[in-house]
Amino acid sequence: MSFEEETSQTSSSSSSPPPSSSSSPPSASHFIGRKEDIVKTGRVTKLVNGCRDVLVLYHQGQLHAMDMRCYHSGGALQYGDIEEFNGRACIVCPWHKYKITLAEGEGLYQAVDDPTARPLRTHWRSKGVKQRIHKVTEVNGDVYVTLNNSSEAIESDVYQTEKYRAVLLPAEPKPKPKK
Image 1 (spheres, one colour):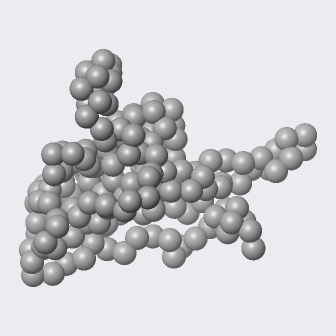
Image 2: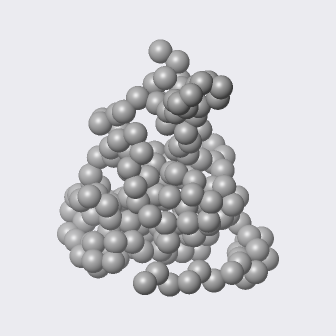
Image 3: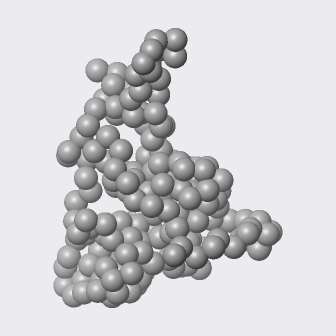
């Protein structure tokens, strides 16, 4: 089975495991907030370790953490809708509608088998991991994030630099609040 065939199949086993729960947080973790507060608001953003903007969100009984800015063009994912594509929960970037899986950080797109055939037949495919995902741990109602410090470059890393924060972020238009 090819990579594209494998990623285009509906997968019920691709959901992430629930956040781990123990008596003490991992040594390299960072306190995000109380679980009850995150559940109530649905999502929270935090600058972690002075260097990484992280979005923590609660969806269908699970906590997820990822880089806050979309890998494509830096859109603020905390304003994105959560939708399901091919059986996978995704956050949809509010700027350009890029779909990012909550569990793996994969970018999804709709591919067309034969553009000349009518009606068009499309399938959801993976672009691979584009958004850095971080580990969430819950300890006695407190939520912690352990940053994914993999040395492998991931596209969302571009928006985690001082240059981005100092030069590009202040010039960004402010989003209008949802009603």
